[in-house]
Length: 142
View 1 (spheres, rainbow, N blue to C red):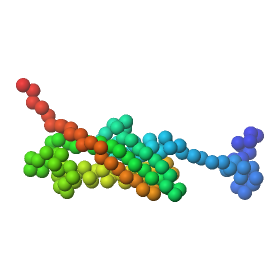
View 2: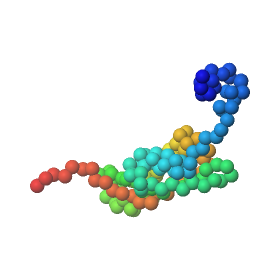
View 3: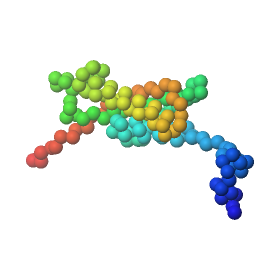
View 4: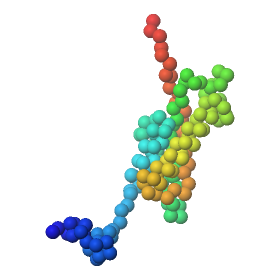
């Protein structure tokens, strides 16, 4: 019988079973950054490569800083024909959409790091670096 088979067959409290449980599992910083960036990219509809994540240890918990653009549908437009730039900080129209989606992405990054990466998150901040307009309207051919 192999050592692995003996360990599986050993009673729960035996020395063989206890020896196989020793060890450590670690998740690298690179893997944690990838987990956070992937969730944010999906949430905001941006390419994964455009999302950057910085991690640091803050009293035994992760401090997370995410920088990302946000994609906004140009057909939704800003209220009353104003420009998107003028409404990006406002509390209605596109500005609310950007803030709501950014908050959802920030929360997802923290949740994914905890759930998938097994990391305790102390603080998670998200910075919107750019608002990208996408026009999804159909264009008529001449």
